[in-house]
Image 1 (spheres, rainbow, N blue to C red):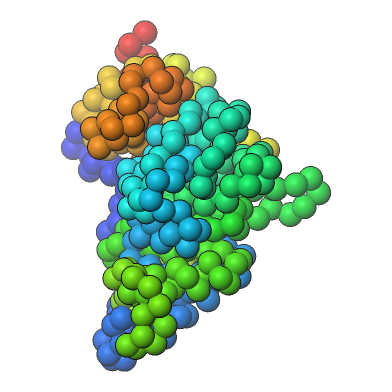
Image 2 (cartoon, rainbow, N blue to C red):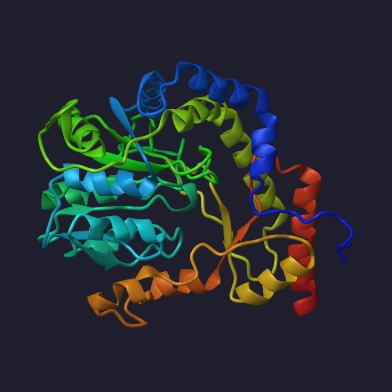
Length: 381
C-alpha cells in the first residue's frame, strides 16, 4: 500500500513550474511595471514575434484568452449568424462556445476510437454547407490534419485548429516533407495560455496564428474594438487584448518551452513502459508522423471511476478530461442530441483518466503513481 504520510502528488503543479523560473519571471514583471505600458505595447509585440517563430507561422496575434482566440478567428473567417461549424464534442466548452459567440451553431461529429480526436471518416458528408471546421488537438496530439485538410479543401471549408493543448506539437502533412507545428496546419489556429497549459500565463491569455496577413490583421483589429487608429473604428470589435504583464510572463515561459516539453515526453515514455499490459488500461497512441506535446497523459479503463477513487485514496490526484461530452450538456440541448448519437465520444468520456504529468514531476513521484495504478488492478483481480 502507498503510505498516506507521503505528500500528495498533484495532477499539475503550477507552484513548482513558477518556482523554477522565479527570478526570470520576477524580472519580466518588474520590467513591465518600470515601462508603465500595461495594454499592448512592446512586450506584446515581442511575444507575438517570438511565438510566431516558435510555431513556424508568419503571424501571431495575442488576445485575452483561448476562447477569444477561437471566437475572433471565426469572425476573421467570416463565420456569422446562421452558419454551422463542424467540430467535436469531446473537448472543453470553449470550442463550441466560441461558435455560438460568432452567431453560428456547432455541428458535432464523432471522434477517432484510438486517439479521441476528430475522426476524418466522420467528416464524410458533414462538411456540406459548413462555414468552417475546427479539429481539436486533444491532450496535445495533433488530429490527422493531412486527411482533415484534404477533405476540407475538397469541400471549400476553411480549417481552424483548436491548438489550446498543443503548444509545440507537430505533424507531417505530406510524404517526404518535414513536420510542421500546430498553429500552421490549417488556415488559422487558436491557442490558450491558461496557466495549466504547456505554455501558461499568470491568468487568461491566448493567441491566433496564421500565414494569412488579412486574417491576422482582422483579428488584430477585432481584439481592439475594431480600431484602425486611436479614435477611428472600421467595425464593431471587442475588448480582447493581451495585456503586457501576461505577454512578459509568456516570453519567459516560451524560452523554456522546448526543454519543458522534452521533460513531458520523457515522463510520458516512462508511463508507456511502466503501464504497458497493466489491467485493461489503454495507453495513449503515438501515430506515425504525429508528435504530441503531452499536455496530458490520458489512459482509458472500463473501471475508470473506481481507479480514480483508488488513486485519490493513495495520495495521487488524477483527473477526467472531459466527463460529459458537449452534445449532452444542457448548454447545447437546443441542438437536439441524445445519448448514443456519438458513441465513440461517449465511450471516451466514460473511460478517460488523466494521470499526473508536468515537467517538474520527479521519477520517484511518478513511480508512486505507477505503483498505485498497478495496485488497483492487482487488488481488483
